[in-house]
Image (cartoon, rainbow, N blue to C red; front, side):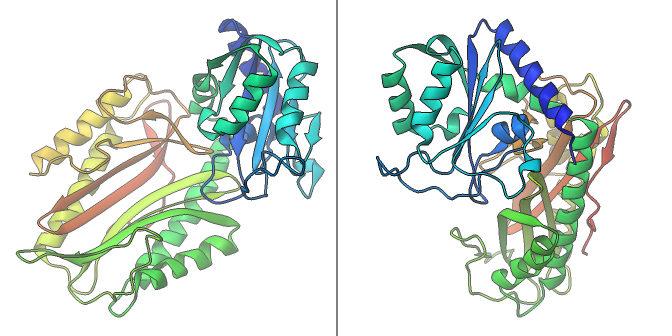
Length: 387
């Protein structure tokens, strides 16, 4: 459990960054109410998460359902505007909260009360701010100049506190157990849905939620066959067969903090080519991890992983060509790509990942580490080799 004093300290640091950016204040937006939403910034500052799912506005009845806002003046007390109240008020870590059906109108009123009806106001969590709500704010507060400010909380969230590291360690352990349960169920005759159900049984009992489960299976070689689905990713009704390859990348959250792991396995007896494709991302990820320490850049870590992968005879491919990312209350900076020159700092928590596709085979591997003074410590403790 993270103490209330830590949340107050986060808000103080956010205020300082607001002043340094010459802003009058900050409007922080988040969306909750489901497993695929973007709650991080408001939860980071207040420990609040709204349970209510998104529904369209019905003016006169409700607006902004599933959204929460923190109005944070550069000088003055912040207020949380939310559509819901937690079952236990003790979960909140902010003094003033406005619970309302008209979230839009209440945000406008809170900004006026905080002296933010004019001037430069930063917006954090812009990816969760609906176009309709932004228009309503702009119309009601015409003297406000809205300034993109996602980087303020992005910078604060990169380096984790001891309490956050403990939460991430717990999330990673739960995710590891769910990953192992899924791989144990990936046997001849099982469907992808049955595999995911095995992991969900572990995850739900531990108080976690599933974010996503990227998965596929198939046969490689001269006549490759791939079994996969998009919505949901475990929707295929094909069954696993002896000689298939199988991979899964599972992500979810425990007490709001994310885990993100990936593993591969043969279904039945492993072939030499399967093992080669499974080993390549594992060895590339470990090479990247070996270079993690304070002072190196995200780009250098990604480069080390790529060069190892190429030395094994494989190339970067796919829609994501990086080697990972930060993790916390969501996908955090830095990104382990060769264009990101962010220096690595102690107490960052990173997911290091790589997948390989070759001649119809897929290998996938991902670990989570916390950066220490001299290197990194593994948080994931799922079984590594299934062959």
